[in-house]
Length: 116
Length: 112
Image (cartoon, rainbow over all chains, first blue to last red; front, side, top):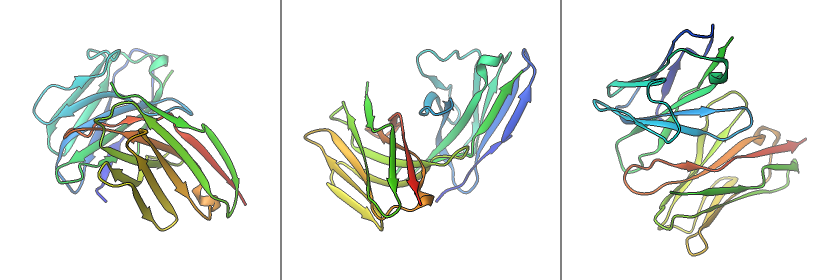
């Protein structure tokens, strides 16, 4: 299957700082990328959908000014958590959806964010 | 919007037994139903999927069934092995966007 990378895999930061997470589709062009948040022992919560070259579509309850998403190319999307607070600590996972009959999603390995 | 219910939340079986995880969905327009396996701290991996024009699909020890009338679909794992232990998520989506709605997950524990 297609490969999606995510960087960094783990980050620890101080409260008030901003953190950028990168999501890359390595061997295919991703027309759409998704950002999820997952708390321990819970399901994947969709935060936003981003399409290359256009503004992201945020799910209800997700602050777009706090979680900045940029999808500048068909292989790269970034999520920036601005002014992070301890409650933002979570596992953030991106996924990429390619073109083709299946339109399956391929997930990145996730980023564990810990805000002190 | 779509609502996906998944049961059970935890399933404990002995090695060699079968495991069944069930999901229901609310939107009759949903037409794509993937299943993901997620090991602790790792990414969800697609293990099998089914589309609404098919009632059953099988891949070795894994099978998925779909009942469109009742709006439910199930994952069946036969001859379970300890390495099958993980959290399994079902999902439902519709249309060209294929943005899935995930179930809450089932933690499958296979005892040797």
